[in-house]
Each structure stands twice: as structure tokens, then as C-alpha cells.
Length: 255
Image 1 (cartoon, helix red, strand yellow):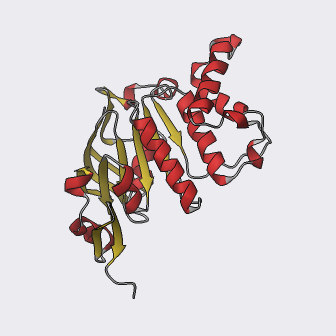
Image 2 (cartoon, one colour):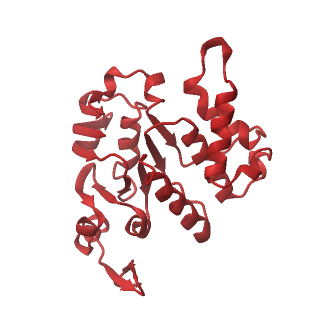
């Protein structure tokens, strides 16, 4: 689905991505893991054409994104940023309707099919009852579900999410991750940037570990996400053990 080949990127003199080569398979939930400043967000921005790539190539379904217009790319890839506060009091259905923008038909704009898609995505995420409520009146977890519904309304085959649960309580974090897993199980490719390795361990199919702009490891969770990898990322020792019937990551020492 996505092939990144020898990708490097620098801000002025600072090298942020260094010869990154990576394959992201179709219809899987991929977790991007790394410390602050490791290059995670820059990798996202390169894949989304927010940054211009000069060294290396990024292919989506075999096509180099350099040859894909922004409008066409928006029909292939959706993006959910970490911060998405709204200045105006848009209704939920209006927020989700914004996801249909890449499919607008010239001067005729949106039609009944676009509205039907919006309501179907709200129903899928079990928030149809929020359709006529102001976005700014929602809880943090509800807002995230609305933004995911907007991404789904783009009807893309790929979704990138940057720290989608960072500002949520534990219950809402789990709710969002369960929903992401359900969505990926329908065949949509999802790449999630997160700082919590437990979320990747519990919900993702694959992990992509990055540090200092280099890929440390990538592959399925069972074989790649281990104590050695965690040490290489964080430079501290962590344990992975089974509690009940669930694996959990915790620091070897709290002091």
C-alpha cells in the first residue's frame, strides 16, 4: 500500500529523517512509536505532502506522491491531527460533512449522497444521536469520534492519526483504540502515531519504531515489539509480562 524508499528530510541544517525505507501493508492497524523529536510527525507530513520531499520516494499503490495532486491525494489519504479545536460552533453533522470536500462536484457542491455518507459514518461510530449538537459542546472522547467520522467521510483507503488519545481519560482512550481496530478490520489502512507502547501492544497489527530519524524496527507485534526494542527507543529497561490473559508493558524500576 505505502512504500517509503530512502527518504531523508532536513529542516535547514538539522537532519530529521535519515534514509528511511519502510513498507506499510494494506488493511492493517500500524503503530508509529518513538520518543519526542524522533521524526514521527515529520514522517507523517512527508507522506501527506505537507513537506516537500527531495531525497527519496514515497509510493502509494505504486504511484509516487510527487505525481499525485493534493486534490487526488485527499481522496486516498485522510489525516487526523492532534489538535482540532473549532473556533465556530459547527454542528457535528457539518463537521463530518467537511470530509466530503474532496468529492465536491464543481458549482453543484454537495448532494444527497454526501449527506447519506455522513449519516452512515456517524451511525457506524454510534454517534448519530449527536448529529445536530454543537461540536464545542462535546466531551473530548466524543470530539475524537466526530473527527474520525469526518476522516471516514472522505472515503479514503488510508488514514493517518497523530496522537488521537493523548488528551483523553483512560476510558476514552480504550474506546477510541477499539474503534480504530474495528475500522482497520474493514480493510482501511490506519497509521497511528502514539507515545503509549501499551496501546500498540494491545491493538495494533504492526509496529514501526523510529529514533533519531532512523527506523529501528518494523513488523508484526508478536515478533518485533519486545523488551530490547523498548530499551533501544527509551534507553531505559521495561518489562513485558502477561497479567491475566493480557500482555502489559511497565518500567522495570519506578525510581
